[in-house]
Image (cartoon, rainbow, N blue to C red; front, side):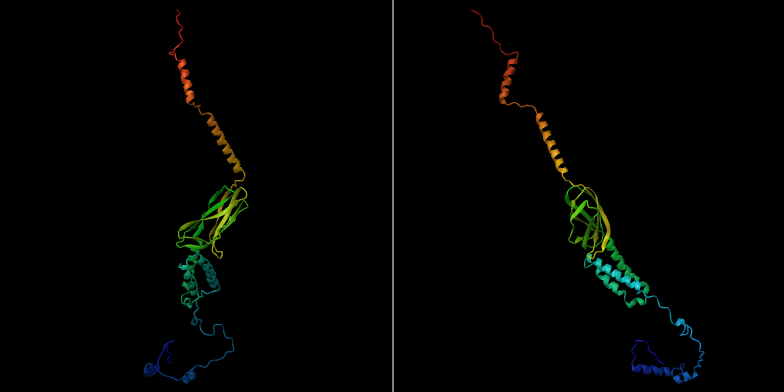
Length: 296
């Protein structure tokens, strides 16, 4: 029997030439199938049940490698797919995030049957890039003195990634009721690559004291970027005391001005200067005196 390799296309003329050459080969002897059946040794039935190893030698069935597409592996792929699709919404369309989906799809390919040891490589690459984005942006923790009844507070955001970020949401949660946030940033935030951005929000002081504000960034689907940071606000509302202070300061300035005015030396006008010169002439020893007249 001549058996060509699987997938080969052999013409009829080629098969005829092979058959003729096979018959003419001196080291080949031809027999028919019937003679093989006659010459085969007879099998004796013992009536005993077959052993588990009976359908052939186990070496004829090599143990296949464990498939990477286990239930755990598939769950890992799909979990990373959801997370990467969420993170991709804050990255530009031209970034590597556009290739994360096709790379994860390729993990279902039959190519990994030949080398399952490399199956984790593309999965780890996508996972590391997603983690880099999740940890590459942060909020700077600060301490703020809020000396007003109402005003703005600044939050600084740092982007350590080499790509721009967009569609960021900022969430602010005061730790107690001493401070109330009036206006949070409603528009999605954007920040350039390797840069910082300042975001302002309006707040109102309710009572004096320390207020921790928990702040964090998230994607449009709610995945938290970076870690939650605390902005410490020292609240001191002005209230009525500011008017008392301003009144006291104004009164002090008025009294000081009057005191300085009272110490200023007296000034004389021109008429007073004439009288003064006459008085000085009278007091002078050279001034003329009245002489008695000689009697005739």
